[in-house]
Structures are given as structure tokens and as C-alpha cells.
Length: 262
Image 1 (spheres, rainbow, N blue to C red):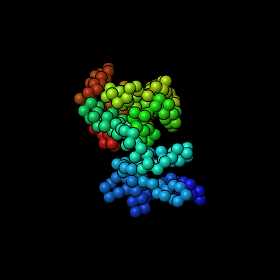
Image 2: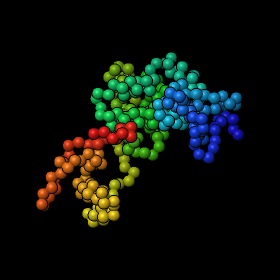
Image 3: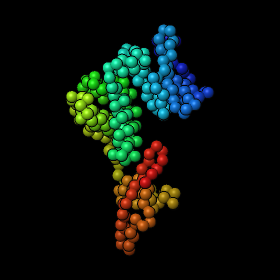
């Protein structure tokens, strides 16, 4: 086994005594319900633990993925050393971004805040979170963006969010200029075009589906309403006459943290 980067290996990720073993590193669920991530690295098989615990397992996975990339690129230093260096150099992007997100509680809808939290935790902070805000460069932002996985819409949204946060840092006079200067970075590119069903196909689908959903499918197919708008419809929102059907959209259902709210 290569002792340069020691991993815990098994066929499938499972939990044993609160500890999740992975192809790289390990994640342990603490009594506090938070998650602790760690990995073994170096000739002396030293275990390195994340400087903070995480409220969601996906955040712990993101930290491990970042550490693995640093090891593979040869840019790795002990996490504690990096944390001390960031503290000495000033405010880290993660600290500022978390503060910005907390301040949007009364400005953004719950769904927007949940999406932004996801972009921060899964896309932006794993690659840039430890960087001192004042030291963030145009080249670093461009390299981060170029290294993202092939999810065009997600990447464009994450880039737009980062640009917004750093614009706030400019307004706060922390930064002189915004380092987000990737050309067309916020432009969304579809990987595939949506396919619209014909009227005959919509009727055929409605005939095949469970009877209780037939009216829902017909209304969705012919109205063009979004899922949240359709789900929130009530009988009083439908005005049915002999020759036509009118639908009034007064509300929409939004899913936040696996909970649907109006």
C-alpha cells in the first residue's frame, strides 16, 4: 500500500459504530449529530482531522474531496497549518460568505437561501473557502471555475452567487475590486434541450397513469404551469365553464430541506 496517502477501503460505504468508511478518509457521526471528517496521510500515517465539524455529511465529504485534490496536486499542507495561516492573513472567504448568508434571512425566500447554502457548501467553499478574502485573485477564481464538474447551470449559478458575495465585500471596502472576471461565467448553457410532448402524447400519458393523477397530468401538460404551482392549486383556483378552463395561480409550493412549504 502507498503510505503517501492512506485510505480506508471497502466495497460499499457503510457505517460501523457511527463511523463511515470511504475510498478516501473517514466520516464519523458525533453524539451531537454533527459529522467529523478525517484521513491518514504521509509516511508516518498521521491522521488529520477537519478543523471544524459539519452539520451535514455532504459538507464533510466536500472537505475530504478538497483535501484529496490538494494531495494529488502536490499543494497539500497540514489543515491546521493552513487554518493558522488564514487566521494570520485575515478574514477567510468562508467566514465572510457564511456571514453574508446569515444576513439574507430577511431578504431572500427560504428556497433561495437553501439553494445558496447548497452552492456555497458544495461548489464554492470546498475550493475557495480557506482562502483569505483579500488574497483571492482573478487567476484563482478562474482556475476554480475551470475545475468544476460538468454541470453548466449549477456552475453558472454558483459563479453568480460568488460574484454577488464579493461585490458585497467591495461595498464593505474589504476588497478594492471583484476578482470574479470569468467571461460569460454566469451564462447558463443547457446540456440538452427540453422535449415538449404533443397533445396526443399528453393524452396518452394521462390514460396510462394512475387514475387519481390523470387530471393533474392533463393540467400540467396543457397549462405549462410549474410543479410548485400545480401542487399548490385548490378547487377554487379552477374556473371551469362549458367551453373553457381558467386557472388562477395564487401560490406555489417550495421544498426546503426536504419539507414542502407554501
